[in-house]
Image (cartoon, rainbow, N blue to C red; front, side, top):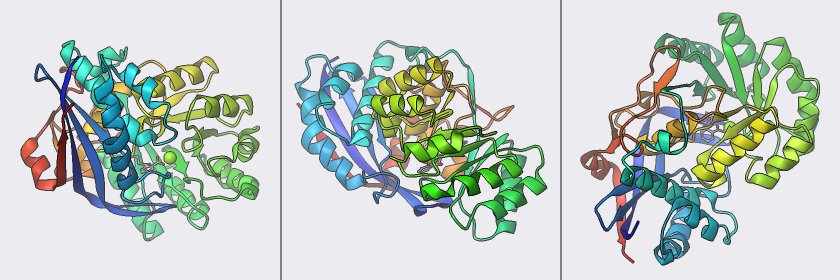
Length: 371
Ligand code: OSB
Ligand code: MG
């Protein structure tokens, strides 16, 4: 593969409704899009999940743009054969910035799969034609509004619901949803909002209301608190923010702090490392699933391809396009299918096309780099 150009667009897409978590509320998503083109005219797409503000993690659109423009694109242009593996290996000498690295790594994954005339899912070793998905439900203004919101998602066909929680928005909303939907597969995600002394409190309401999984209640580095919660629990303890690399996963496994692994391509720096973390977890008997960051159709299609591979046995946070955006930048849209699933695209690469006209409508800036 010989690269001819890398284009970096900044895009802003309005969300169909605000998404509120323990760290803040988003009304629109501002993100970077990568378009890498080879000398033969083959094109690969990547998306950077970093948001406008460093709230989920320390990265933001601004830090990711700096990293991509000033360090990663020059590094990429210096590679003789810019495979995703070669890129990741070189990029690893820079600390941090996983979302910036992932944006380029996934573009190279798409590009390589396209040049090989096969789908990204196949290239990653995926064997599923459809992936099981659920929906992540943000914090709502009131409990009745939450119950109604969940009800509409169930009517849409979602078979698993993840409620965003935080201190003050936990046992009562969870109880209300459980009362209305006794058989619902219910997960919660706190995005690090609880102090370590909340173990007993969380355990009480999670077990009373049949919560199947509690995601990242404590701080990124609070492995011990997660292990305490997992000890003897009737629910899975899922780690998201804590698992930033392989050593973090090893420590969490050793401490028995993780009984479900959320793999976010963005958080770990790419599809290659995400895939290997999930395989490592599976060897320890820990199931994985693919987490989302409200991605556009570009990031979503990478996530769907990853979810089609063997270690991803739990339902992923990958909803239909219309759950996020009225008008997405890719075509065709992802639609929810039977049994709460999304179809894995079979076309070359990510299997969906970027609609340049729609992209231009939502684009804030665009820069093209050449070797
Ligand atoms: O913690 O899983 C999370 C969205 C933004 C930041 C963090 C998270 C999320 C989600 C959304 O839960 C999942 C999705 O993309 O559907
Ligand atoms: Mg999470």
